[in-house]
Amino acid sequence: TFDACTQLKSLTLPEGLDSIGAGAFYDNALTELTLPASLKKIKNEAFGSFHNKNLLKRMTIVDSTEPLYVEYLSSAYQALPASVEQLYMGRDIVNYGNSSYYETKFWDVIDLVFGENVTTLKGKPNGSGIFSNSNNIKNVTTPWNNPISIDDKSFSTTVYNNATLHVPHATTSAYKAAIGWKNFFNIEEMEETKCATPTIALVNDKIVFSCE
Image (cartoon, rainbow, N blue to C red; front, side):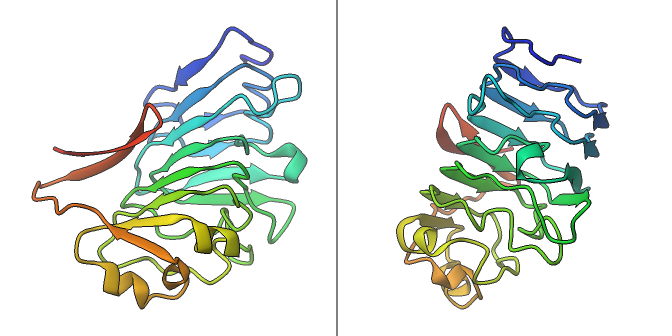
């Protein structure tokens, strides 16, 4: 394991990795993290921290059609770091553990970008939502022409009132008619893309759009 490795600042885990054990990177000094598409499961406190709390600020969860299973026991023992400020979420996060409703929470996220493969914002069916307590969100960027189903509690009232929802070209009406999404006071359309495969990512704290 790499627990207590304070020299580790940036980490891109390789494709082919399918699981991360409990406490594998506990109490390190990571500020950037990329999780591969091949990853299937993350155990309790894999990226937990005590001495170096709140250092990890940027995380990319690479696109995959398969969900990422993340163990959740309590808010004190999250597998994924709650301190992330810039998050690219390219797949669903599914929580498992000793509760029917406790979920992963990203308390400090500011810029949130979703990938095409995301189908739910809940870690558990009975949960309030992964981002329901993320009151610092300023930007939410979505790739879907037809918005995925969420509910009014998926984001907080603070986020609905103050954040900006960035949506694909010519989809404002769809989002204004969709439960949850229509609560955003500020909705902005992105420029029209005419490429075969548009991609959205966070690069150096900025939202970047590209074509492949």
